[in-house]
Image (cartoon, rainbow, N blue to C red; front, side):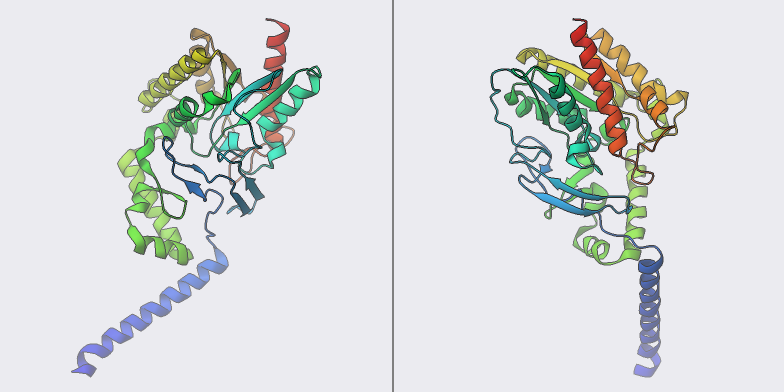
Length: 346
């Protein structure tokens, strides 16, 4: 009986194990899939869906191998120095909201656009005055979550100006919403589809480079089937993501109302994603500019400057897609020019 029924099964299982071992070894050598660690170490919050763990440090090398990172967080969880809530006399305080671009993924803290802007403003301010920027950008924070952060925490910093860094993928994140992402016990953010794979899926993902590829593709496919995002439609008027654009504008309206309640101004900054860019990529800035004008809100479009400067140097990481130090410098310069011109022409 053993020879008849069990030996073929053992041969099949042994052969399968050898094949999987070979495929796994080949994947690790030819197409390694390192774990993404730079978005880990998050914690839950009473109001926010998640935030970086207070006083945590995340260091390593990007999965694209394009840069090393060392993200240090203050006692709230911002990638910033400590700030007391009450402003000192003579301080003009800015609150910077945004996602991973504003957080500064891939950039040293002193190269991030809010840090550079803060330095530039203080270089020209009288000794009796000081500019202070609370750098509150957090990866995957889109306008809805930014408004929650402002409403429950940001207002207590008594900002005079609120700068919102908008990037086109805010539309996609708005489309997905809060329910699409889950904070797991280890502090990592996972798609709900990935989370539904349970402990076994998590074990396979963490321990196999080959299965990591398979699971990434499976989860990406399932997410596309469930949520049906269409990136090219972000740049189309009355397109697939029109409802998401409206949702963003509604959140900005709420932010302006909150700002008015504390006597703060609002400035929206359009930060384009990595090029190349064509005429269709003007749509976000044109729409935001029109909205800002009708709501008496400041607006800066970084796209024209990025187009010019990109002919001289690389402004984004080719694979990762985030702005590098040069890209952040362009963003900071555009905001600086706007603020200086605004002060010169009240």
